[in-house]
Amino acid sequence: MNSSSTHVLVLPSYNTGPILRRTVEAALACWQPVWLFIDGSTDGAHACFLEHPEDWPGLRVFVSEENRGKGGTAARAADEAAQAGFTHLLLMDADGQHPAESVPELMEQSCGQLEAVVMGQPDFGPDAPWVRLAGRQLSIGLTQFETLWGGLADPLFGMRVYPVAALRQVMAQTQFARRYDFDPEVAVRLFWAGVPPVKHRVPVRYVSAEEGGVSHFHYLRDNVFMVWLHIRLLLAFLPRCLSVARLSRRFRRLRNGGADACC
Image (tube, rainbow, N blue to C red):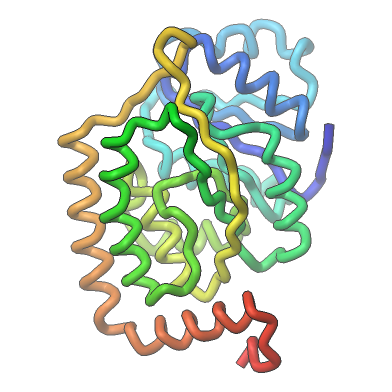
């Protein structure tokens, strides 16, 4: 188990069910501290953490009666992390798709590149639904265009290490990015803000319903979120395309170790 006074592991959870306990146990075995944010859950899966906190050293639980969405929870987590003196936070989904075993690797990469956002690049297994894989290609293509191929990982994969100050600044600049649109929008806006993206490959597992897996993806609602997201981003991209082009060249040179990488 690794521990840190600068990097905290954050688990947002909304009605995750029995798999929540397994996720928390796996997270604590790999990293401490772990912060669990209960985002308006009504399933009672978090009760054990509140009733017997002494059984969960290294865990801190935040409970919100209102469902804020992943982005809203991330914004609150960033504020809490800043107040507690943490400089970076790793967001990891509580539904079992994100492997806790990858947490130390992502955190180590962040410690070596403190100014960067370390983005998990998913390796999907045969259990991944093909319709979900096909559907994400449009969002991947659009975010690549909105950053002029500057090196973003899969924008819909949310296992990332964020610099807290940069995340708070970006979230303060938009009233959106609070729900399903959080992961792609914040990735693009951090890029525009000059935060370099770093990729790290992460295996992904889709947990079946028989194993306790849950999904809150709503096909119509969340695809409408995506359409509106990219309309906003494309309109915001047009007046800043020259500065985005400069950032894209700079980040490519950084990845290639160019001598003029910081120019």
